[in-house]
Amino acid sequence: MTETVVLAEVLSEVRGQVGFITLNRPRALNALSLGMVRDLMGVLLAWQNDARVLAVAIRGSNKEGPFGAFCAGGDIRFLHQAGSQGNPQLEDFFTEEYALNHLIHNYGKPYIAFMDGIVMGGGMGISQGAALRVVTERTKMAMPETAIGLFPDVGGGYFLSRCPGRVGEWLALTGDTIGASDAIAGNLADGCLPSDQQAAVWDALASQTFADGAAVKAYVASKFIAAGADASSVRAEIDQYFALPGVGDIVRALESADSEWARATAATLRKRSPLMLHVVLEQVRRARTMGLADDLRMERDMVRHCFYLRPGQSETVEGIRALAVDKDHAPKWNPARIEDVTPEMVAPFFASPWPAHSHPLAALA
Image (cartoon, rainbow, N blue to C red):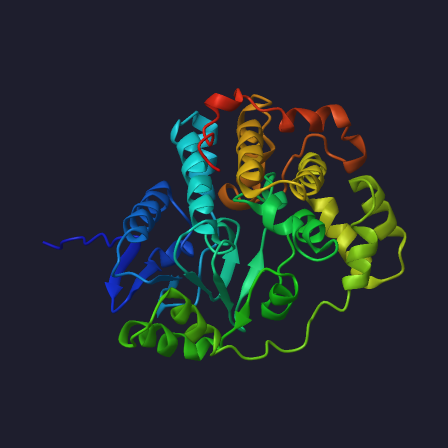
């Protein structure tokens, strides 16, 4: 008789003066389940008032062991199932995930994220609020939600809108993947650590004596190296095109340009959900003048509408079906063309379904 051992998906322990968290769902690239969100919230709340813990360090794992992949996002298969069947845990997932994102941004102790390998979607939500965001030469960072008919949530409006120039609009609309140097240049990471040095730095945090949390953070930062040349030679083009007033203007200008980058970017945008491209551009531009709590409340409104605004016509359910369930990569977007999206289709995403006092995230400050 064989016994099946189910390992915890979030491993946490205090060693020395530091609280250590390892995301332990490697086969799913550590995609966040509702249980993982709840475990993370519980651990962080417990450590917030624990005098033994000066700082928190978080990493992912791959099939070979620690590091290698940080977090690929939310569990989109669960989102498809829950969104298709009306499972109320869908609502719980987003409310609790966004509350977790808010806690991390406002955490009372240094929270240090080792963002090795894939860092996408929900993985950005549990790392962008870190006091120290550590990338490696293996980092693959993106907010690819428009490919599944969603929008860059988990505070994406807040942190993408604060990238320099129009980098935020570019990343939000295209879902393009960037590496360490572009992440640092885009204010989405603080420094680069060689991937083969992560384990030594991680273990040193457990064995050394630190005066305070700031000293823990400073120790990790002291190990940073130059991330190499900034790969974004197209920064001027990004700022030129993604500052245009609307999605149609952006795509037309890209398609009429003579650069290979511009045409490839236009082709990428043509594959994304036309409706959600318009919604996302509005999201990022609204978020520029918002604090984090207000942005998360706006995104909570938006995600409710993504699943329930148009019964039986959810862009998100259809996008996940095409990418991750049936894997035919042929989503039937509605409307099918960028040119067919009207302002009247976009506006409802920004109307809250709740009065302010009853909003699921009303308590966030």
